[in-house]
Length: 102
Image (tube, rainbow, N blue to C red; front, side):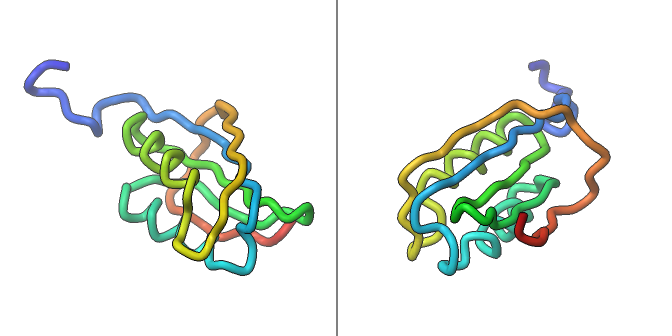
């Protein structure tokens, strides 16, 4: 990276994350939204009917990797047992939403 380039000049990347464990009813979605907003990431988070939490993070590679790393522990009341990641195509996202359960 040259001195004139910044992280904002890097192409956006998108990762979908499935988080398992005790991750519902512990504020995981709201904490994820706060972390994403803090990192300047767009995307969404939602509960899954199978008890998991699913999220899509889109932003600079460094910010997305930081968000994914955070998902391995989540908020203090969560007990994360497994995290799966999948590369996603970038989308026209402009904020980070909490979506309805699917």
